[in-house]
Length: 96
Image 1 (cartoon, rainbow, N blue to C red):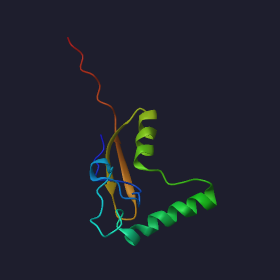
Image 2 (image 1 turned 90 degrees about the vertical axis):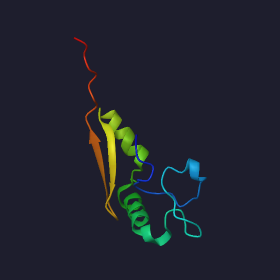
Image 3 (image 1 turned 120 degrees about the vertical axis):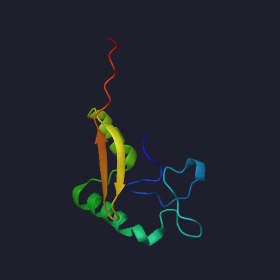
Image 4 (image 1 turned 45 degrees about the vertical axis):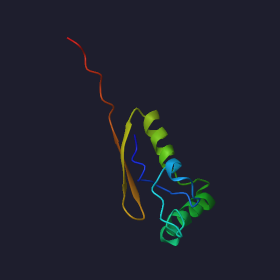
């Protein structure tokens, strides 16, 4: 399970607090803290226009890890970059 206060690319649309996948900035700020994270959105636009791709969001990384046989462990927010940590799934204990 992921920590809801961690994210890769946070939405600029405010949603009810109980449905928010990440911690939102207090009003009157935009939920994603506004221009403070604009570089992440610019990178997304550059990737889309130059490489015909897009930045992955946390659910995308979680699905990618699952498809590879890994469990999502943590997302490390490093300011303008993030690091996704996976772990090997726990093996079921055998009863002897």
